[in-house]
Image (cartoon, rainbow, N blue to C red; front, side, top):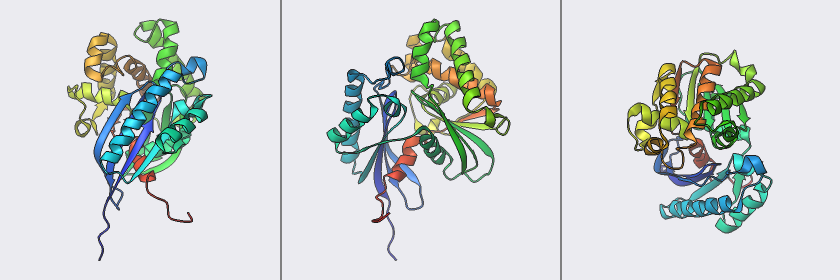
Length: 315
């Protein structure tokens, strides 16, 4: 009997704040064994909330990072590569134009995901292999948007996307004294609460008091602080659980840290944004009365490597 081998694939996630690469061996049973996980901060969405457009400088930084990620993916032997973009490119006036340019420059078509599609894919990645049927909220705190996916175990039910990610919130908070100030933090929490009430209030009763599983730089930062290790180690970060009190304590600790200390823990590219992420997480935990938060490193890229599979002829 012929043994079906794994296939090496790659996914490049073009987000509002970073370009992330995953190269992995995908097995016939769906297991994803990561070989390369890397992220580059490009701040694609810098100024987007105010202007509605992606700047030439941000586009150039991001294209350079995509080209580098693509070269690394091919050097490691990835047979299939999927290139997907999220909030910044889907919302910018010049998003379609830049997506075409990226495709022309790289030879790989850009797949622009809708917010709901992004949330569904993240849910699948996080909940893959889940054997219980407990209710769960999966949250992806990104630079331009926040995705909420609701389900029972591995069964996806519904999703909502809110256009108020870390980059946008950070820039808006500057008008209220900056995210580092008490006034900026309080104003940020109020904006988030308004967005939650407008978009996902209907889910609050059914999903009150359930576990939140989260992906993205904010959740990673909380896990690293909880574990006491400023070096990113996916095997250590993945699965980290914080109860509600621990999550609140880390949020306060981040807000009390000077910028240089935050750089030590989360890196140069996220040291400013992590406070916006903390405000989002604080409000989400309170909104749903979540008793615990569990951190996952299996974000969008893990679902995308499945999407990289060649489609059968005629499908």
